[in-house]
Amino acid sequence: MSRAYGEGAALLFGPMGLVMIWQGVTGNVPRYPLGDCLVPRWLYILTGITLLGIPVLYIFLRSETGLKFLGATNL
Image (cartoon, rainbow, N blue to C red; front, side):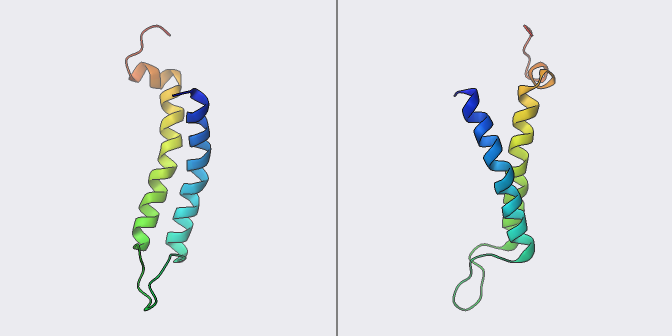
């Protein structure tokens, strides 16, 4: 996978995670006609936190410290 794809994914997942957290906190989630949520609000928040973690992991693993953590020796 090209490095550009990883950076693009990191740029998309960050804002998407913030939107998911915001929807979960404010209750702006899809509902059935009788008022029940299709997906629980806590799942929106958990998904948003996970999506925010992906860019952080990408940046860490692309850094020199992350490469050392993975065992790269020829830096």
